[in-house]
Image (cartoon, one colour):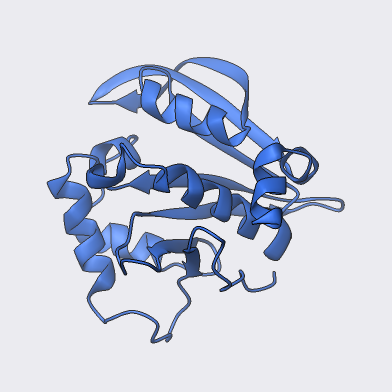
Length: 195
């Protein structure tokens, strides 16, 4: 896998990958992100299947190469609108695939930044890192996450009864996916490239 691009988009969003022994961020950045997710009340939305302790969460998001974390940075303000990651990475004879996820901090929900970050994340996954297919699991009751994934071009392909958890209850899970070809043919990709 190639390293994701560090080049800002026209809207100044950069998706920085988290690699071991790097010094792009202050030492306690991931702990601050963990606490920010809790303060915003969105941690359980993100890790909806099982509550992870801080230590488990930090071990998961820094588990490169099994998990590749991206921290989105607004270069105009220096703030972190959110994070994304890809995990369950698998290569078959013909494709590279993985499970993608995003989380954005509440102060940015009413802005354009989450979608801009999502597009930049997809650009990195598909065109910098070489993934052919990204898929994900969304709890059916999480309408905000469903709308966000759809806005990026992910298509829901399966409704699995009683498949996941949401707010401590067993719920249906929706599987969504997008291919590199679908993303690259989208208006979102063209807008990013034309910048």
